[in-house]
Image (cartoon, rainbow, N blue to C red; front, side):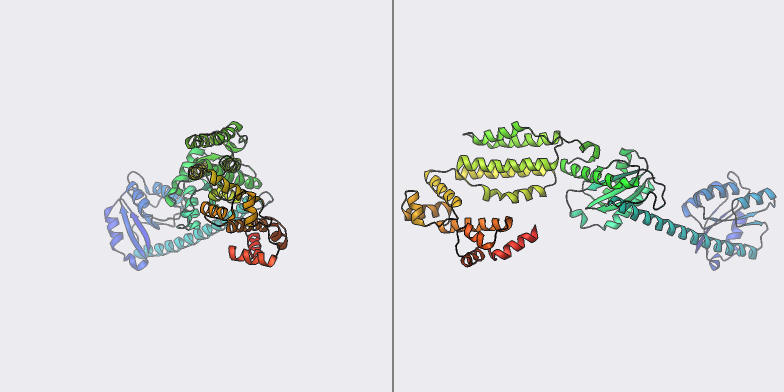
Length: 511
């Protein structure tokens, strides 16, 4: 059905036109009538009819003014003029306004039906033309969108290899701390909605999803605060998480889009890291990579003092974090300093208190991995405080007595001489103790026999060499105290659950 409105200042004409013809037979639905142009315009704006049958001479806004106004807003609307005046100027104006026909009252029913059929045909032609134009525009946009994506990813193109009118580009990246938001969203639909909303706001944007970040190219000049407000408004309708935005440099060459993208990505990472809503790339180009050595020295002094204090060390950690935030220390530099802090703490505690905390905190490569997995400076601060608390609890529990110190020395000897043949009698003689007493004391303090402790050292060292060296397995077995490789293989598989060769292969794949 096609929607039609009848406009005439005479009610009798309107009533006649609406009742004398069975409009449904001709695929027409009368959706409104009006006796003047102003009332008609309001109905037209609400109903958006396909065809309008209108008089010319009406109070207020006449028919020609009405046609001109509607054509500005709804150019595909088809108009039929029905008038009691056969004046040339009216007819001329009607032609200029692309009116399909000019009928003179009184009008024959068949004549009206004929014009309606002609109007329907014209409407269909206009709709087809509009669909074709929309399809062409959509295809052109998709082509440009793909073209800009290639440019974002670093492919160099000849200037204007695809025809477009854009000569200014700014890249924005939106990131989130948590990845759960991705599970409940269809990314193409999200990008389409963002693009549609921003284009309706008057911006020309292209939207992508790169490295788990919403990536936007804005073409043309813009007001930063207004654009970001509009952008956040539409994204928050789809994603409830707090977003962090990085902004790249505004560039004038399409071949510099990849530069703006890298800057926006780096700025977005900084925004996530410093928990700052928006960061422009210019804010992170000259970050201070120096670190106050006096803070590190304070930590060393604290750990070597007789009355080591947890709250003081935590205050020092907060001082490091404050400095990093204030001077925008890059995440890589800060994480390196945190790693140095943890390893320094481990070494100082082992030296001063003769306790081992590496099994509590983890091996060095584990610490590096854990730090790299943290995305914000606040997360890293909590990680440092947590590790420090664990260490202090450990110290309180395991401050060494004389017997503990003796056992600690035995453990140190085993850790340094695991590659040599070691017998219990020789070990007892070295520490001036009876073998049975040494065995009992060690098992009670450590929780495992000397032989099992030595075995764990040898296996852990073997695992390290398998991961980090090119030594043959027979050489590694000798290094860790096994002259018989076959026996070493049996012990290793029993302890680790897999053969040395399979363990090495597995860790090479992981790397």
